[in-house]
Image (cartoon, rainbow, N blue to C red; front, side, top):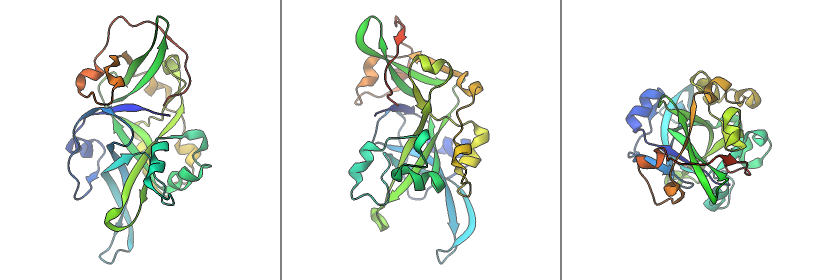
Length: 248
């Protein structure tokens, strides 16, 4: 399974949007209009606060952190397992060993401008890419999970995108979609004390899906080496899509 999305917002804008604090010692990420698996991405997570001796204080805050896309469980023998952990299906979050513990207490938000999806075309063997993005240009928050692998300075932070069955007009393009969380569900999803994962991972509300534009774009996005805002621009003369198996 694979996926791509766009994330062009600066860290200083994301900390304001998500009311978060930037993780210490991390440099800026450049705008990326072709985010591919294993790239570094921004996530917003709940960070527990500790006292001078390292003991939890019971408090916490939202932290904007750079992590690698492709979740590596703490028990994994090596990081290569992350290449297969790009997405976590909402239907099995509490069952699969790779995601179960993270779903219980290490949930995060993954900021995005929108995501790409590919559909078969009636008039060509080449699949047509689409960019799904809010009509008003606002930021999206994908539901995600995060993990940390290794110890000390060698620790690696990683994440995965939670996916769900597509709804509304999105079903015309694909049968699955990232689980997009509206702002009023951000706090609950990030709260490590919440254990009712089923309630937290309810489908994206129809009114949110209705505000998404399904925009045909150039096949230039197919090449991960290509990057830039032109990848999200509307392409003309596109035929109607036909059904295809799950991609994201």
